[in-house]
Image 1 (cartoon, rainbow, N blue to C red):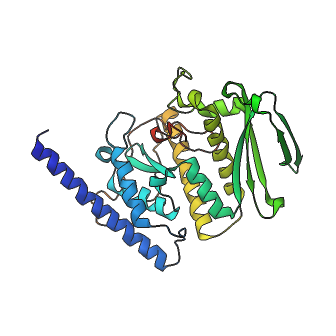
Image 2: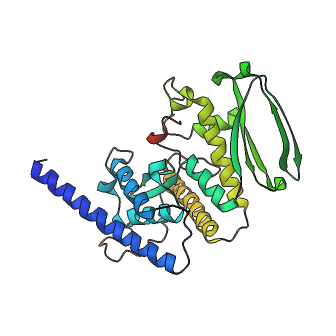
Image 3: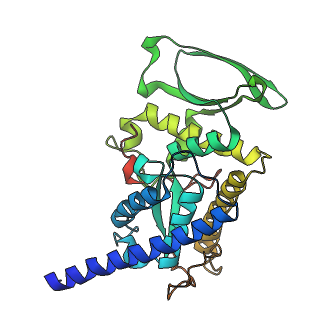
Length: 312
């Protein structure tokens, strides 16, 4: 590629970035004027979109192709719009982007899931702990709900090679609303095995899950607990409806991709596109046949990628 060609490509990307960003901002202004947008305090949509472009430029598909070389402009606009409606900022590691066939999709991180859950449920705290061999854990169940969990631990028990489980508690001012979920280490490892970072050959000594098992276990239980509580909420706020719609679309994408992979006869059903009339390819074309991204089979969440190789 000549220097002139490279320069032309950069200039074209800058023009496309501005066009897409302007269209997204116009759409968001309309939503806000109609009372259909509820953003966090001190949240700057413009800054979040700028941060998102830095992440998108680095994003690749499974074949190492740059995302912007394979995805539609309309899907980029839709991913950015979803990011803002959920109040997420990739610059704070609250979300990232994945290539899904010919579409770019938004994926909240565990930090993003915590932030969304705090806004939707008005909870006070979200805390996770790992259970090690030798720890004493007791709890009761009431109407199928874990209550009165007590966890006693000695410092000497803390050994990443001796994890037996993890739990997450979401606390409220009204303690009767507190919500706890718990996983055995076998369940946690099953979730990890869905990750492309683990692969078919199992866990390597250099894998993130083996180097940082305590933090990765916490991340896994946080993701599951926050999604479970959000899905059980009967809140009908603007944000809650947007979050539930996003979660439903995410699960449907994974399900449809699995059907396509297993039967090779179904067409992947992509969600309705945003209104982006300036784009020539605003109508989404059918994605290439591609296996579903590695995901949590229970929540439908796509497993997180490279930026979380270090969970700290």
